[in-house]
Length: 253
Ligand SMILES: Nc1nc2c(c(=O)[nH]1)N[C@H]1C(S)=C(S)[C@@H](COP(=O)(O)O)O[C@H]1N2
Ligand SMILES: [Mo]
Image (cartoon, rainbow, N blue to C red):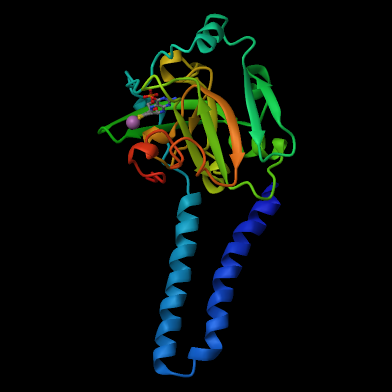
């Protein structure tokens, strides 16, 4: 999906919302009660619009002096998957990120290819639900241009991140985001942390940075991106390892 199509999709969303209210107009605008309903409808549209604008706003960025001396590693910090360990031992020289699902051009990208994509650096705060926050500088490929390269099909609605690690020894970690977050300018596949290659403890070779969301959405050890229309048939059906265990799927901050 190009950015143009994406805009079209969002506009379409707005149009269908206002279309709904327009259809209702004829029937209710003559009565006082009708006018009140229209007023609240307008407020609803305004609120929906503000929500969209808010979701596109940038997360706060910090100065280099505020970078945490020790950023807490959390969750998996050293995956024991044999294929992952082999890649780590080889410095991820032959590792490739798979991009598939509802895309026109499925791809497998090497780290060098990822590094050649449009990139961004940002110093942001990571907030974990366990009650800690740390600040680091992240550099990585912007997810939006990467998705444009693969070409999202029109029925793609979410991007699923499949990871190499397992917290319970049974299922692998995974997460998913919608296209608003996927195309947010600060959403990165980060390959550097504090100007050095991303260490294994923090998700090497790449981890998601989705700065408007809580820590558990920031998938580490990402091996595969899958574009899907819904995630009801993936693992527990809630769109992520922790969402399958009761956490909110949408963890906006
Ligand atoms: N693959 C994978 N990604 C993950 C986790 C994990 O266990 N496995 N933990 C999540 C949680 S709860 C947090 S707070 C952050 C921790 O990132 P950090 O190790 O860089 O602090 O990664 C998130 N992404
Ligand atoms: Mo977390």
